[in-house]
Length: 120
Image 1 (cartoon, helix red, strand yellow):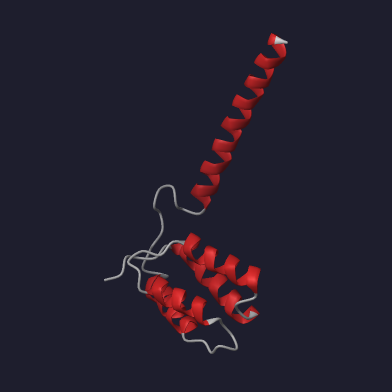
Image 2 (cartoon, helix red, strand yellow):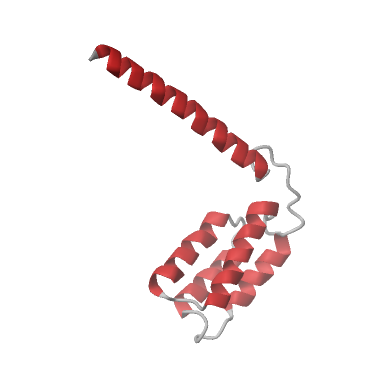
């Protein structure tokens, strides 16, 4: 029994090491680990996109989500996870049209790829 537990622990260590390596490689690919992105590329375009989405008509976007998008656009720092939470909420409760959700997803991907500078 002790040998089985020891072997299981060793397998878990190997798995942990592999997962850590995979995570580091994924972060390197997204240029997040070492900050190798140019935040000027996405910045104001993403903020403007979020502000435009916040003014979408009620037939396209729920008023509560529109308010949250407006608040997001005015934040000093916007992370992809902020948009992801809104996307999940929209998908769960059908609060946005497909077009709006694709545009929100595009904004999230722009931030993931290029970063977004702090608001001036």
